[in-house]
Amino acid sequence: MSQQPPDRSTPSPPARPDASMSLLTNVMDHSLDDGYAEATAKRKADGSAAMPRTLKAKLGLAAGLVLAALVVTLGAAEARVSAPVLAKEREELIERIDMETSAADKLESQVDKARDDVGERQRKALEKHGGDQGQLVALLSGATAVKGPGVKLVVDDAKGTDQGGGGPRETTGFTDTGRVRDRDMQRVVNGLWQSGAEAIAINGQRLTALSAIRAAGDAILVDNKPLVPPYTVLAVGDGKRLSTAFEDSADGQYLRALKDTFDIRTTMSVQDEVRLPAAPSLIVRTAEPKAADTGSGAADTGKGTS
Image 1 (spheres, rainbow, N blue to C red):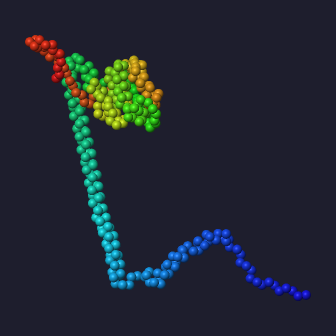
Image 2 (cartoon, one colour):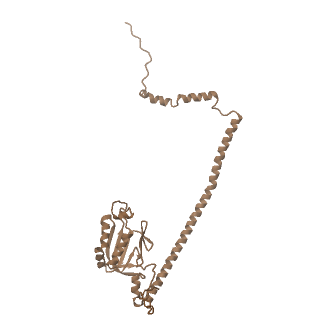
Image 3 (cartoon, one colour):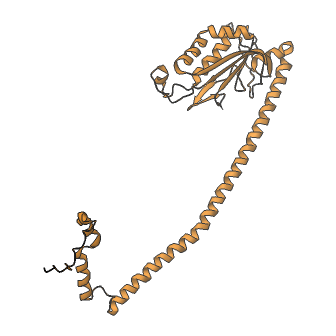
């Protein structure tokens, strides 16, 4: 019985794992388009891809390289030259700013000294010409520092000053209803005067009969001096009576409405003693009766200034 010879044929190769991704494999194996390869081969055959061979072409290439090198060199040289100049100008500008700042500080110091000197002379003049009422005149005019019982009222912006909402405060151009405005402080001060305050100061700024509370942008000015919140109002007077009278007044109710409607923070407390400085600059004006002219027959107003 014959046996079958063993099968020694070459087995078929195993299937590639990436056979299902033939498109991606083709892209990876032939990353360059055949057209690019053909164009490159054609240029090599024509000799157009080689360096220029004629003298004119070589001179043109050399001139282009020289021009490029010249532009780069000039740019680098200009940058190197301008850098120290800019640094020097910057140092000079900083020095000028420092000098001007020092000069402004000196002028401010001189103004403060002159203001103190004027205030002292005004107080002496009031004491001299006021007789027994000199101290009372100085107190009422704000020419001297005072201390005594009173109240402390702190008014501050709302915690979130960017909230919106309708209301009459937005009709005047202010978009932020949570900010304390100059008209709010005007009403607070007028309410304290009406309630019996004898002397008032805001953030250490003494108020007189000539004081003005205005606005400059979002800042509140008292006698042209900007104030920063919170606004601390100190008033000398009968503390309990002054506090009760202010809270019951129309201005006190206005401040309460600001607190309830716009979340403006306010606190008021009775103090055993508050200290108020003298007004920094005070214009003293006095009036004297004018002698009547009997010959003219006209009524005299009796007004005069000195």
